[in-house]
Image (cartoon, rainbow, N blue to C red; front, side, top):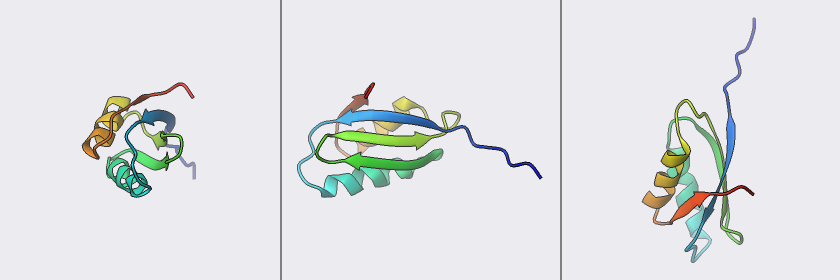
Length: 79
């Protein structure tokens, strides 16, 4: 039996406005609620958000919108 792999993309976002470590869980929960997001990790000290997701189900614009819904502006980052 062959297993099909789900196409996963690793996207980095930079966010601003973190005021406390609880922001981390708020953003991670908002992102992982999206269909197609496999994992989301927020780095409080750097404002970096790492997301593994299926681009057929969720776009980078969707990810940015989810972070905005959590109350934080973000943008795609190269590193």
